[in-house]
Amino acid sequence: MTRSGVAPRLGVPDAVLWLSAAAGVGTLVVPAARPVTAPLLVAGVVVVAATAWSTLRRPVRRTVLAMMLAGVVLCLVAGARWSDVSAAFATMCGVFSFVAVVRLLELPMLRRGYHTAIAEVTLVWLRRTRAVWSAATLTYLLSLALSFGGVALAYRSVRAMDSAADEAGSAGVVCRAFIAANLVTPLSPPLAVVLTLTGLTWTGFLPYALTLGLVAAVLVPLGPAPRARALPAPRPDRGRLAAGFAAMIGCVVAVLVVLEMVTPLSHPAATMAAVLLVVPLWERGTRLPARAVALARSEAGSWREQFLLFGAGGFVVAAAGRWTADGAVGRLLDAAGLPAWALLAGGALAITVLGLAGLYPLTTLIVVTTVLAPLGTGAWPALVAAAALVGTMAAFVLSPLSGLTLLVSALSGRSAVHIGLRWNLPFGLALLGAGGAAIGLVAAVT
Image 1 (tube, rainbow, N blue to C red):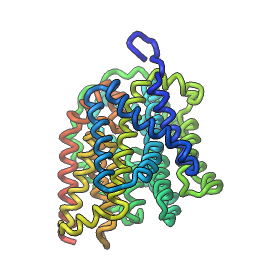
Image 2: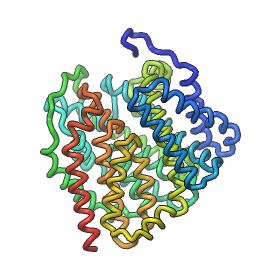
Image 3: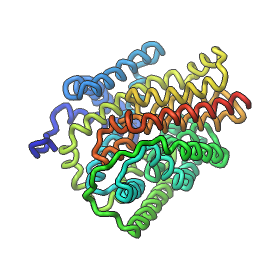
Image 4: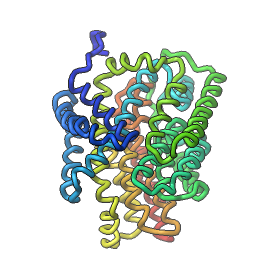
């Protein structure tokens, strides 16, 4: 809503953005429709740049345009055919724009006291302590308590698809892991992605996850504890919270089972179906379908900003995929003769830095892990997974664009930039330094 209380209307650029997002999702569901959706995707790319220049705040505008330019440069240097890049862009833009729409619908619900179980647990904790600690504290302490079962559930479902080595199958694996695991705990998506991309077994990664949890517990005192504003929403009932959490887990399991019977698990359409089925069931009492248009209009500025960031990020990932698909980056790193600890530390740092530069951390995680995973054997997959997790979680707690930072921002009434880059800076740097040093040491002695 605007300050005057009048909901802004969706203009022509926003309509083109919606059509472009629909085209991306349509290309995912029906690959044969690509000739029909191509004009809308081209229009979407043009409108992304034009809308970013005309409507966004200056820092976000610079980020979006820089990512679009970086994608073009990567395409030209890699010698990629524009038809291939446009197809990859259709997939990535469809996925990330859909995620942006989900985020758009989550924020107004969160302000009204509705969100996933993690948010409700956070609400109870905030009302008891009247303080907001580092978002990293919430991530590790809550996620480590709940993520093992949730990630095991998502991991077992996506590993069944691992035999599908085609490009669409790989995209479906990552997307399904992200959507299914994101409904359980904020730590699950990066874990599900790194487990899937590295081929590591869940039990093989368990010691590394526990070690990271202990490191986080030691570093918890570094998180500052500023006072939070009074929260008007009533305290959630514990019984309702437990029942809702159990219902959400049941919904995820049911959707995974139904999709496994109805459609091939590797098909990216399963991701969209899971979102459309699970999210309305879980966001209880919000009348999601009936309010979708009103929410989109009242949050038009927020949605436009998120769509542009996710769309531009997807374009960069699609372009960078030309470098990773044929192993070009891997061959360069192998020829450089860099030691294992340098590659792992560099990968973790790259995920964090690019996450702060505006890319959603999981997009960078997918690219970096895809590059590093095939470079070694033995204990390497576990170390790659641990390094990717350290870099991703550091980016999550520092980046103003991550859902975790936005969650604490909405609950505390503080700017997401203030939370990510001021409140969480000591914790994020300590986590990146301590975790990177520990992983590098293990890599150096093995």
